[in-house]
Image 1 (tube, rainbow, N blue to C red):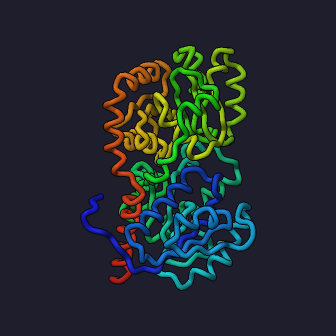
Image 2: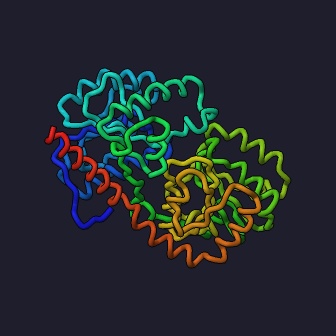
Image 3: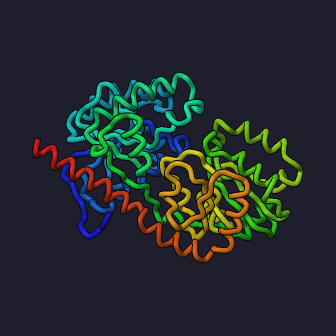
Length: 384
């Protein structure tokens, strides 16, 4: 969107982030925090109240300093407890707001209306096998109902907007794309490459980095297979950053079954500091991203901002997010073999294209899109 005219709203806005447990909800945490921070940057007098758990409030007190942060009582890490709080404590405290945004893809029952619903993705429809039966039934009941009753739904990409229209029957005019935003200041601190090579035993050779929790759709095993078959450089190191998810055991088994040569070239530091993460991505030959499903794919943008080329799959939204600033390939070994060669051969071109592309994905741009949506909703409410 153009930034020529600064959007603004006089609505009193509440935001339900009770579901957002730092470190447990992946990219949706960054997505919501950065759009709210961006909105406050654009409109410092925004009347914004955020309802969240104690850990979230403590972590983001400074980042969201312009908002009123309200700490929910008790443990919001338990889904039944959180749902109960949303239906009682939250419902009672949001009656005086003009609109409430529910950030976790579902709106509680009962719910104050009108409300805005943020839907991060519909992965449960595409890959139901990745979800337990109880969670799947909950999503099947609550997400369509919540989306159809929302005054507006916001999504991170055009891919998710199309998915909602197709899968849920929601009017596309009631769905607004609020793109993910990265915060340049968060990428400034970077551990020195020499220190990273020493600490993680990376040697002197090329490094590839994949920052992702071991969820099934992240497809880590594909990278192990590439090391075993086509990425056979002895000095190459694949660094897998991120916490353990539902596919952690499958990854363990794939590594155990691989050759000793392959095992020796895989480095798994798990969760690392922001400085280490930034430093590892910045020093890499490429950020590799073989995911089979994404609502946005924020690491692509962060790598571009850090000056690192990207090699990613052609799944879901990734080609749209990558544009011409990355090498996009189907999930076939021979395609990724030549894809890595292309990344290396076009490094300077891809880095330049990436730095240009990230200008579209700052937290300020994300905040502008959010405010534009609220300004539109305000006009509609005034018109009745």
